[in-house]
Length: 328
Image (cartoon, rainbow, N blue to C red; front, side, top):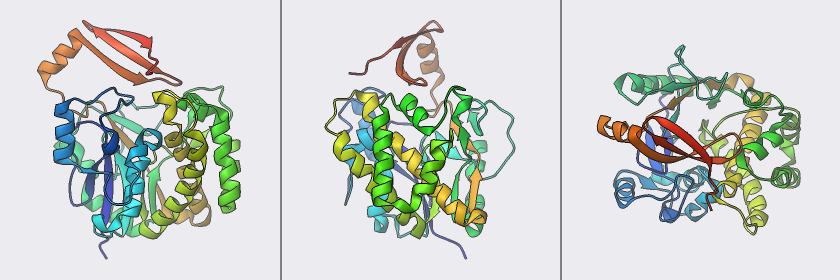
């Protein structure tokens, strides 16, 4: 039996378009795209491309206006509440414009996005790369498994001093421990069935990456109920705090741990129905023309995320100068 599968591909700026019967490109934060994000401001040309090529997360029941807090979770919420717009698929998933699953399960020996990870770097999206995303692989996997996800990543590879996922959350989100603790409190109060997996993260530095998955529809609905119950509980307090652009995204970072908790819970009960795959990372998702690459070599600026903070990287004739960016 062939399943109907829809995998959202989250975009917040123009990049190589990934679109097919399975892949649905969606602009996250369409209702707030005139506001500054972690990557700065969109140009008029950027906005036009996004509106002409992608659906938005701002139709029907949505939280598009909260995207600066929820990150890619605004796309997941939209899919949860608007499944009819996707044709009521049997499986629902999420990838990012530059981070994908390798559905082909190929062996790779190139560099990785994160140290000692199974997220492999590719220069760009071309025809050869697209073979990794071929429909036949996705169909085969969804015939066998209920959940497809990343392989767990141990954050000790980034920082050997880390002791648990809460410490990694603080580091990655530039936020405070209280918000992770609020998440734990909400799990205990609203969904105690996940306490065991929550406690596992208290003694572990490993988790599933990037809120990426493909799930059978009933599990997707269950996952969303759990995740958004907890996130909205935390958000009600978090929204009243004064934060910068980076710290505002803490709710989205918390979602990674909720995704990990949900997948781990299902895996404990049904280990043979969860498939962990390698991920890919596209170094040049815009497929930048050679002239622009030369100009960027001469002079360019961009915001990058470090282990614990944002930096502005200024490139002058190939020399990169990194300075801390407040992003106020």
